[in-house]
Length: 565
Image (spheres, rainbow, N blue to C red):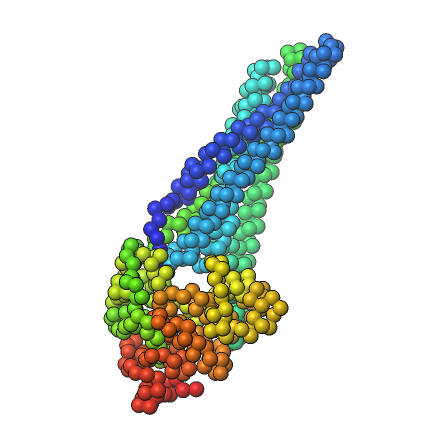
């Protein structure tokens, strides 16, 4: 389930949104950076005026005034750069954070299947693409401020001699025309590179998740070869992009140098002809040297715009993906029960059962596929309109409930629950509610892990629980589910990685902790089946038998063979 989103649907809309909500910061940054560029341009102009007037007239007052003017220019340049970049970088960082959060929120919900993006790819979009898209906040002010520097230089040179000003303006237009063609190539190459890097990231995520099973049946070498192929493609595309960037940077530098040299040569010729003075020659030579930097920055802006556009287009793939369903706004009745009515999906063939409020029911699924399909339907990983039948919580169909209501009242804990980097406490209480976690720790028998370390419940946990055993990770995931304390809790094979004695104690603890609240356990564990109020036998996609665990053992030989250990 997902909340409806009427936000940007294309890369262009994403960029417009980013620019629109940062108008204030960009205006301040543009003003300060324009002041910086104007000050930088004013420096060679001031030197030329000093040569033209102060030294020619040899007046100490004029020289002192010129030195004071230079000090003011230098101070203005320093402060305007410092505070201008501070404003722009803060806005850039904030905007990147907004898009990262937004992409992540979309990645954490089911999206349309035709998007064809894996979790690793969405991670790349939420990090690199979000950062590069937000760079547009700095690109536009820097583009405008560079234009200010070029215009000020052109006007100053034009006042000395019109031909100098025209040379700068015509040369700038010619440079931008050439570079705009190259920038399109950069945008296309960058878009392809980001896609290949994202696929490589997705492959890594898949490998890490399935590393243990791959080692188990000897498929790790084939998987590594597959990753090497994807990684090599990403590397080759990165080299291609680097070549394009190199051609762009080299062309821009060469064209800028040619323009500066042309301005210097023309100014020298005009001075030789006596059409400009010595001070104007000094100014022209100084501006010819200075103008290379703003021209370089100005000529690089189209490249960054195309990179931002390519990244924004990739973000649009995630942000524009429709949710698997449009949620309602209803809420279930207090102390809700759970009802599955005629569900047909995957291995389920018209499955129908009901768990009353406060009841502890276990489902013994003879086929793992049917158990997985049932867990997926209850977790709303499958949209209600993608299967026949209906799932009701508190008498209300899932499709009529709001996202908040479903999350508040129904929790489905998968058998492979994710473990996050942090501590044992932060994994049990990820929201940081501050509530005591002792009951959940004791119920899941995580007490031995806590007692084993000097930090206790604050013991550090690595990403994916790499420093925990399989049984410890499973018990930590169970502790988190029990701690949540939802009205309805669905557990899918919560004790497959623990020994029989521990499993017996956990089963008893679950029944005790969840007393009075609705609990459904999908399992083949005799201990959990025995702890349940009743057991439903799921065979061939439907419920074929229903009774207590011990009664089923006594009268159903197939059941006994399926669950006996």
